[in-house]
Image 1 (cartoon, helix red, strand yellow):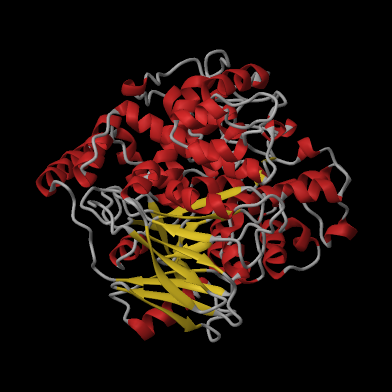
Image 2: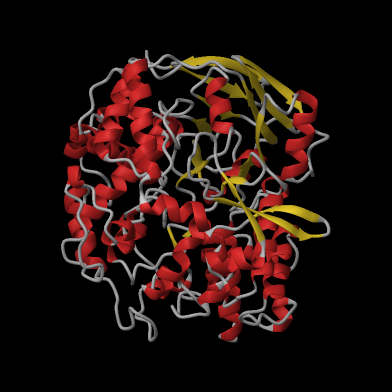
Length: 612
């Protein structure tokens, strides 16, 4: 088999046992890698009503055929399981160096079950796994944890993915951190890791699987590098990071403010340019990336000479969403989330909801323990510290907006979430393709598989007939949005950074050169559709039905200000078109039997539609 090691490491933490899990070439062909392959492995282990934090619940780290190769922007890995936040399919991805180390360790990924009786970390070096004691690491923040492990094992040869106190405390939106501040942030998979008493996964090694055509891979790598460097957005990412979008986004009405009730704010105070002007900023790049969209803020304070800088989602969540324009507090909020391993999106949305409830008179000063004033950066930091420390109102905020709405007896449409996952910092009222992508996303509201705004801003995909249109027109939007969702879902299978501006044809050529399997654009789209459907089937097993495919009312009500004032997407129209394209049953929300068989998911079809 080319492009793969052909094996996962299977770990039972309860029994302190490791063994090789060999996978067939057909299995890799069907699921490719990354989050999709993880879904294929997890599917058989899912049962309705199961506790995401139970020892038997699997946690999977997975790479793809692109990982560890000379192709640019492929140092990505996926971590997957049942989300402790949503109760459905959960996945997150991250970059850095760790993905290369994990692939170099001699495995395509790790399948973990069980719960260790004491804190441990998993160490894999060139095909040799060990389960090591981590009692001395429990309670350490993510930076301390990485340093202590590297000091012991050799900093130049290992990379660490770990949890902080949020994961240890099993906060529902705890993330997993690697290579200092790189985050697999969403869905609370750090809590799943913490429930297993697994503090860290440490990877080392230089075991690289052979490609099918080494010369062709080398040629395609050069072509891909030229394509990426020549793309306009690559230049923008390099100069200002993901924050380059803040100015444009507000102009388009795409940046939610004041808990999704406004779209106009003092953008000049929180833009990429503002960050550059106020601080000494350096770039950070993942392994093999020519862009370097990550930010490092230098000389932030006497005790923080170098600090991970915030990106667009984080600045928006702790900034405009809370009507906070104090960059200092936003950078500090990002640092606290990184330090303790917490999803900045869910944390920021939960804090903004608390401020909204305070304004509504539902959450009082006595209940909150302080005045929750819009725009007060110190209040944002205080609430964040209360979440991390599980103090007072912070314990409720740590459960997310849906739990908050239920606790206060509010309409659940007021909770800014889809399937329990907080809505990111792009607005479906500004791009209707984003709205349908959020409502139907495999893990809930997801800006990484729902970035249809990039299509309507001119980023067409000619091979799949995904073309720009009227961003405020719902008619005819769902089918191309579904195709684009499938394509972006596949990036997390390959694994490939979503900022890699490669054409579908280039991706097919690279996949063929690495694996020896022939891929056309149509084959690639089918693989993406398969990926969406296997994840959907897992959530269906866990109880998801059609009523989960909806945007909350707070994100649908027409705004009174900004470029999209008075606009709202037609969700019923788009959902029917989307279901028609996907071949999903309108009554149950499940993929149809015929669609599952068409995609080669025969066993899933038998499970969902048993013969009478």
